[in-house]
Image 1 (cartoon, rainbow, N blue to C red):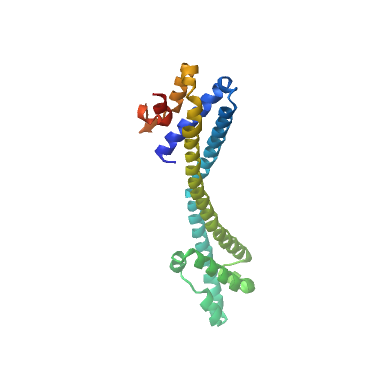
Image 2 (cartoon, one colour):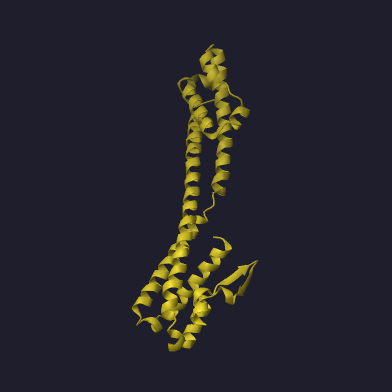
Length: 234
């Protein structure tokens, strides 16, 4: 959430808490109680959406980067052994398949890297018994298989997190607008009679209803930010 949205959300939570603490004073007003219940539900939704929005993919991106390094390292090893075996048995097709530089692998697009890894893995698997003399065993092929499989799965996983966060941001704006409208159009109107019925209670409501502008770690109440409730009370 941006600063303005945080301030609005804080105000909505403040009103929610105020009405909860003074439930006995509004319990006979069923529509007001129902509106408060709606506000509480909106605040709960905002809390959950804010958590979804705040999910950070930096950690996953770092892990993915490390996975790529390991994939390139193991792929280079298997490719070199396979190309050497191909040269030894004069198999030009196998040699062409396995010949690739570490630089090429490091600079390949992610999808191309996975495809190349699978291609070399498939080419090396049938001749794995002959690769031992070139320093590659079945364990190396198993590691390579795990590497490109895990790397392939990581990209959509990160993308899905980003999509979820983007959707949460959109839904959050909708919920904030819903809560603001509920206060402005419904709760403010039903609280106004308390200005005469219970002036102290109404004044406390206005305090809860005011938006506290938070900037650079400071909090200052702005009378002009009291929204419709304040202007209605005048």
